[in-house]
Length: 276
Image (tube, rainbow, N blue to C red):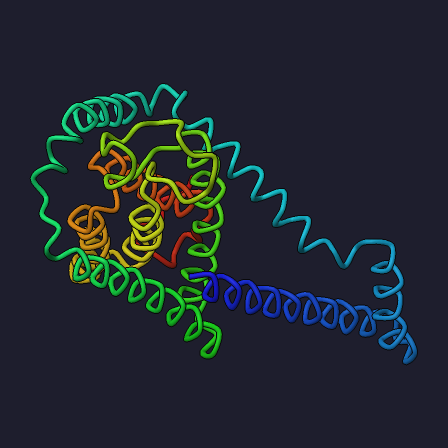
């Protein structure tokens, strides 16, 4: 997953840089047609470079930083909006129910096929990652705006998911099912790799949700959400997480992916995009 993140960021920055150069060249060309001075088309880019040394070439980075901060503000504030109260209630009631039955459920999950579950979870997560990266690569190669948007918004979704997942991991510090007393005690760890929320389902649901929204065909939804469900189920049968961990992680991944899609999708590319 880390390799996939790194490759995606590199491609995004390269593609964005090319877009800025193309824009500057177009503006210079238009200026020359009006001024009718042969030296101006060459001088205009030099002026742009000079301004860039004072910070303007970093405009792409700053725009994305501001956009990311705005996304985080919206995501962290979403539970407090009146229109989301029903989802808050569903999440809280479900979490409470799972917390009450976590230990009982885990006692009934055998240890015989744990390795198979681990492999299945990695396979489904990897397939979803490859699908997302493949769509983006194809979009860049063919200059397909819809495919490029899918890849770019998937990367944004993963970044925002990471920024929510990480502090929750540190704050909860929950033991995994086979750690300590096996009761899933909270605030026992001060590191990144804890049980709550479930990371594999969270990131898989985030990617799958973006794909399913960008291409809202029935068969795409079946494949995308099927992969996410497979990861969620396998992390439970693999005894990696308690049911409540998986419930919260899966819901958060879905909600984050849905929010990023509707916040930044381009109308006309996906049938599911209905921005005002």
